[in-house]
Length: 128
Image (cartoon, rainbow, N blue to C red):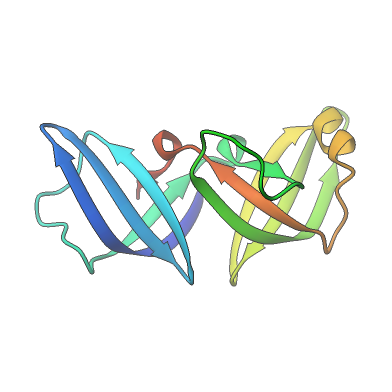
């Protein structure tokens, strides 16, 4: 599980559904959750978790997609296996791993040092 240290900048509640917006460094990430501690307030420091298989990578930065979590990152390492590729990303000093099929990584022609956009659905982010 990847983790990001973040600061809560907005909380919206609708019955049991919570929409949190957080700041990670100078970037923003949002999450949807049914379970949020009532003591959580704007300004709280939180740990956000994301599975490696839920992190997508785009090489084109302004694609029209429904995913609003778009973090700018740099690729620091690529490990290609027989079926899967592990892509290590640096987001303002935070290291994340994305796992994708080898074919997907090859189609993107990823290289160490590339600047990419990390895409994460709001429903794939959780509180640690």
